[in-house]
Image 1 (tube, rainbow, N blue to C red):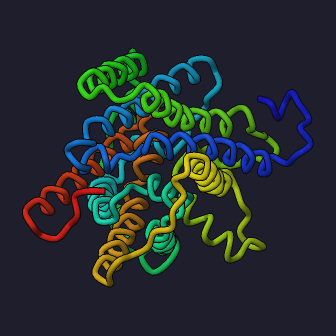
Image 2: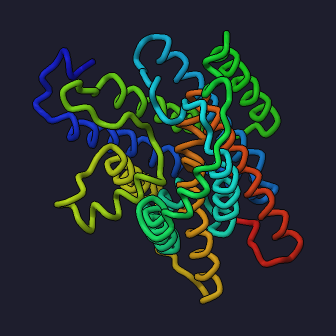
Length: 348
């Protein structure tokens, strides 16, 4: 849209990087202050769980409602995106989601939260993310790729790829999300600031869809339509750093850099910047194991708590909603095992 009406003086790829960077900065600041994290909402301390869930569900509702409005207004066009396919890689979604959920309990944070913590000086989180990125890339294109293709070949056909394809599906999903957020907010009564910041995090997902599908889409240089996520972007970011002359940066790399920068600026301004590291070899092993589970699981499931949970679910995607349910189930199962004394930490 903007590419057709304005000569911005930059190539489409450069503008995508700038868009990702801007959205990442907003995400990083909002998530650092609000401690936005699905793991905290489903497997954190009892004292923080309800409040964290209210903030996360508010972000989910903002993403769903914002996407519905943007799509109805013509600012989003994602009809051919993989999220909306009616052929679901059902085994990958379920197995990957369960693995990712268990992994984020082992690492005490979902990938979005660990990215924010890295920007705040947490070296444990940085280590997890590097292992996560390698595991994700190995599942996409490396030694784990045969596992991905084998599990991914088990599919199931459904009548619709998205709830939005149903009559009044988009308004119904938006209304349900609003009601769900209201219930959580009224029950937990989190601070108004955190609720607003949670909504801002959710709206960055809408911004990503708008930027890449319409506002910055160039018919002469078409680039992938995508929104905020962490699994593929972290894989791309790691290997862009290693081989930037062969692997160009894109929206996802810009987004990851933006989140790191935004969380760093926020932590610095709030005097929360602090170096932290591992305390024992056993702790290191636990975190690395969780990172591998999240890297492999995020690829199999088709996204993480943000890529599938916010960006994908905002479209009404059946695949994304199933992945989100599987991630939550995996986290709850791992958390339950920890309470039975099997060594998995339940607190952040």
